[in-house]
Length: 252
Image (cartoon, rainbow, N blue to C red; front, side, top):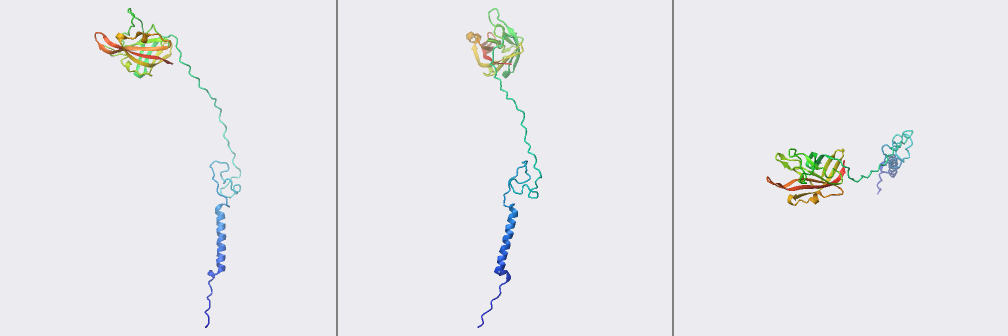
């Protein structure tokens, strides 16, 4: 029996062809990888405005034209900001303590929280040694006891005013509503303004009025503001007095 003849393999299935194809693919892949990676160096971040920002910092082609991003032939000069003028530090001066003022008559009386802004007139004691009151026909006028301290002067200053008259509410109609911590401002004839801060508000019955507590002397500048309060009777008038206690806390 004659053995069958072997068929010849096609050229694309030969071992030589496979080796050649593998070598060619290897060369192509290596060449393409070198071109994409920029010679094996990772790209560095470029910050806008930095000197030499046109080229990638640290890359071997950064100083050669035609490699990557174009680089100017001469690097731009580094501009360093000039230091600004030195600002002198000014230390805040401590606020001097509020001291008493010399004598000067009051001209205007203000309680900003109550909307009171009234002129002032001087008052004296009558024949019975009682403090006079402002004229009834001028209900918006504040009376200031001339025998006591003037605004801001050491001692106890006394201001009085009507609560109402037969014609309606007067200057101190809402005096009992002033709150502790609110201010009272009294302008003086010399142009300065004494600022008092309210300490407390009290209502005293006229039959047991504490003269010493209200009118007693004081070493510091203090103020008492007095008006009528309590119940009203046509025969005897009001039964009580409203008294505001305040002390000097500032000068304008």
